[in-house]
Image (cartoon, rainbow, N blue to C red):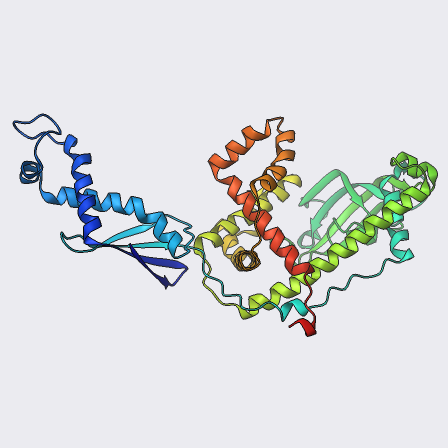
Length: 438
């Protein structure tokens, strides 16, 4: 079997396969044995007619077609492996030559992962890995954050609203168009228990800062303009008026950083808590430095490497982004349909907005796969199973059983690929080549 590869646009691989006449003849013989029993030949029991008589009644073309199908089925995967083509979608098979005493030829056209010619990585691996030194200020900030996470909210009655407070408002919002019709205007938003954390940035821009200094039970008018980047297009740039009354103020009572806080969090004492915080911050600083370096290296590689992106992978990446957005919206009490309606766009328009980011993601992943191949990085079955273990525990299912399900669905290999990409990312993030080593 001779195999030739041609790369076509849009990441399509054309694999031309040639089978020698002798092998094709043997395939025709096998084809007769497999199809003879499908036909009734007068004067013979099914499948018992001699070949010459069978061909006279049925035609030799049936045998040629069956032989061709068997050869395609037998050699399809071998041909792709021989030229290192990783198919992504359904192949298109084109029979080129199907004649007796001649080579049998067929072409496979299939969307596939492109060949990424990395070249040497030494120049990009000279990018320095700079991990900031841990400072006492870093530790103090983290300890403050830990203490705040254990804070209890306590009611405030006499003090005005201040930064960090959790307030509840009786709120009505009016568009500025109705400014002169207060008596008859209908609010575009009305909420008796509108909750706001001052300084969180979760409320519309400008609202939180204007709440500072207000007291319980005092009616107040707040005016602001919705920003141009607001997701609700009907409110972008609109002047609005909020009639509000603060109905509840609670202030975080942050515990002191001491042995009591440490024991509450499961540590022996404050010193043990402090050491754990140092380790945590050190790990975070190192991880941030590695991620920063990885981003710079991938940026350089994306600039210098050019190859076709498989449309199927881009569409899958867009679908993943849509699912991620929908999950985030559902956590906020909304959904994708609400989001599309608020922006007055179709899902097709949203998909096109997401396309550039999806293309960038696919390109990064293909580069990382190429890095893994170049560095002979692999992921064993045991490593994949280790990742499955927490899933099995969460679903209260035997690991082996879950593995079988994942393998049947193809998700086992998807997980293996994600682990491989993670290894390649770690390699780029941490491997430093000095100028002398180039």
